[in-house]
Image 1 (cartoon, rainbow, N blue to C red):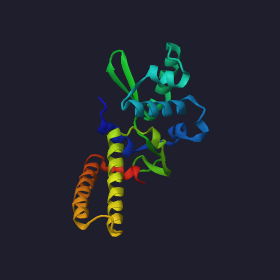
Image 2 (cartoon, one colour; image 1 turned 135 degrees about the horizontal axis):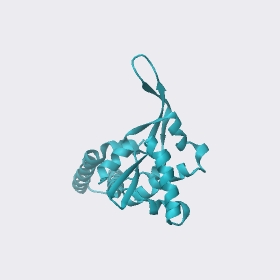
Image 3 (cartoon, one colour; image 1 turned 135 degrees about the vertical axis):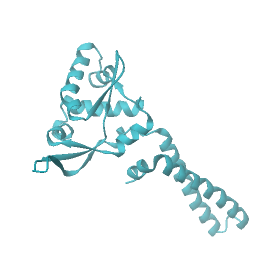
Image 4 (spheres, helix red, strand yellow; image 1 turned 30 degrees about the vertical axis):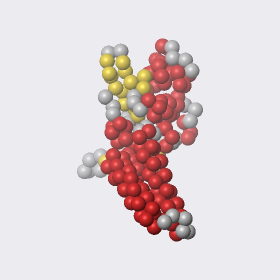
Amino acid sequence: MVNEEDLINRIIKVKNLREECFKYLENSNQERLTQQLIYSIAKLTSEKMGPVKLAEISQDIFSISDKSKQDIIRLTIEKSLLKCGIVEKLKYAPNDVRYILTGYRFQKTKKIESFRGDSSDPIGEVFELPRIAWPIPDDYFIMRAKKEGYSEGLKKLHSDYDSGKIPKGTYEILFHKLNEILGHLTKKIATKYGDLDELVSK
């Protein structure tokens, strides 16, 4: 089973793609089914926070989920996106197959042949799918919003104290409480979502 930690790792890690596979992500392929599939799987995974079924992908792309449409999607995924390592196929049961992206950030690589053996060199900048389609847990956004709220609250507290609106004793009590909560939230985000938070904050 794919869990929250696995989904976050798929966001954080940069997936290397061969030149011939990177084409599925490029703008010139926007009208092609392969790119529609990538974006559909990303969107649906974000909504469900987990792998998606052929019927769900078909409904999203074609607004219908009959067998013929599902077969087109399955064959397209297997002949291109699975072979390139962009999509992963998961079998939950004999009649329960689901799909998920292997990553959300990709690096185009070029194959280099030498006497030491084959290797690959990165080409260009890292390409990432729109962040709105990243499967980020709601809990992360809630904690981020709380952290920003308490941070703004502390600024307002300082401002009110400096302008003489709050007595010193009240200010010190409130400052201690707010600062303690803010510190707890900061530590919790760093512990649970540190790498993700660093990436999203860029």
